[in-house]
Image (tube, rainbow, N blue to C red; front, side, top):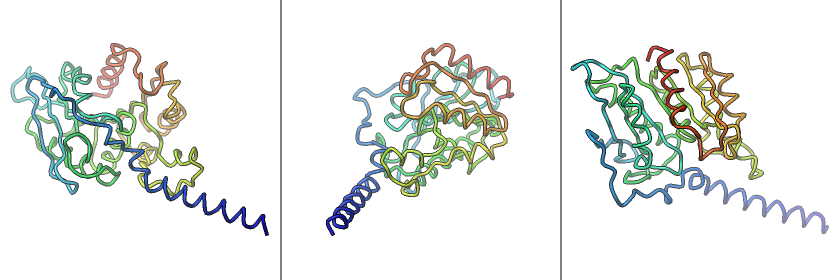
Length: 269
């Protein structure tokens, strides 16, 4: 009788624990309350702020065009999608080297982050990514056949979600997971309890374009094996290993941009 009571009590405690984690998982995955815009607004030459009208409300994006070398010439563009603890404010200057490659840059915020309305979820983020892509595709400067999606960490999930809905010419996945179901295990919960699964592996398997996977060998948040699995799944995959962890990747910015440039040149983008 005592054993039955102990088992029953353990089941009740586990169910209460599981319900709590299930309820809080989006706060854990998307800690938007920690991501506040910096006091001093980022100012970049020719940068244009865009407000995307989505089901979540108004979501901010920053469009930064590369300098014109040939007036009226269509040019490639990249959509950059940041990690879950970042904002576009923190990433804009870091990715300006795209402009030096002659590639226009669009940084897209997530719902509920920074100045954007709504709440983040896979569905809400996918809706924002589609709206951002459609805006960029309709831009008179953009070569719609050369739109790249570059995602870092959870941004890789956003990039893959976009690739599932729209025609992307190339994917760059940096420190990205195969899916989020694996993260239920450390909490002793079944994978089915994960709301936003971001099944990147399935997207990469079906993606016909080139994919660049970049991953830190010592990544403590998203294990290196995720990068290996993504690279094996890609039909046209390139895999680069960096000797770093998650938040200090890449360790060498110069080499990082050489790697990106080589990938894009080799694939005609």
